[in-house]
Length: 410
Image (cartoon, rainbow, N blue to C red):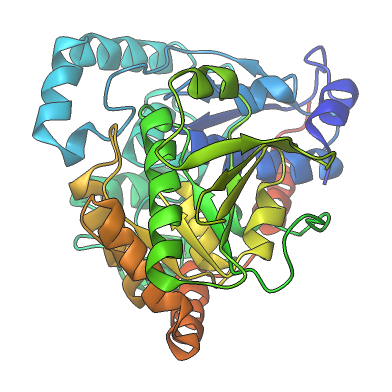
């Protein structure tokens, strides 16, 4: 796979080839879109790609030197307003109606400017492509028949009438979509690509149970991280593990660690001198000898090294489950609260355990899983089945490239 840096150097926006618009609506969706684009450019190096990140800053596109356009949501819910009436009320007060009017107008203004679109997300990206009068391939990463409703009547109509082809997030959903008359394939799950390990963690104590700590990337990050510190220390106290637990905390690139530390560490924790190791930012130890190592840019290594995960994230939780790692989750600070966890548990099934938003309850669930190898194995198998495997990014890129080569000559 191309690195973001090499991508930017070899695919300048001055290219005059076929014009591709990528529309996505969320951080995880941006990552999946870029995973597809990294492979697409190897097949169609002369295409000119523009991205519209409808939610958030689109930082993944910026890393690759891809031009971004269109109004983007910075609303309080960060895309989860439909799950919580209070969040939705805050969105309305913050300009939800005006934003969607602006996005609809922007979409109409794109008519005739592109040859084809890649839409990654949900009904919002579908609608944007329809308003832009663009043929589009749809990557459905937000809906599944494992959820209560699957696709809504509006979504089914848009996909049947306007989408060239849809890529379902799991095989049961693909089967259901085909029965509903939608052109659909299942090729794997894009978020499960790019998770190959790149190295080892030399400073993990031999025999220490390893947990991935996933605080997420949205509002509430600092508070959620403090909660994960508490969960790990309580799990060590309750479980009496020897060697003690090690937590590998996956920090997002933009997280300001020094600002986090300025508020003081949770009770019983102190900072250690971080040894020289790839990606290691900070190291902490609790008085009960549990340790937390904070890394940036080693997410795939963390997931591959751990026995299980404690996650307050979105896509990262799904990736842990998909790699067969049992997950403990609970309502987070910020937009991913009780209703979000309830919805995700419908997808995760028996591969995850949801507790109330209480560090001790989460710690008890961690101990129960680590002390029960049979439960670990069963949860891991369920997760791999629910999430599907890797390979989708390459398959979708190949399909998009085939369409471009046959229909978008310039």
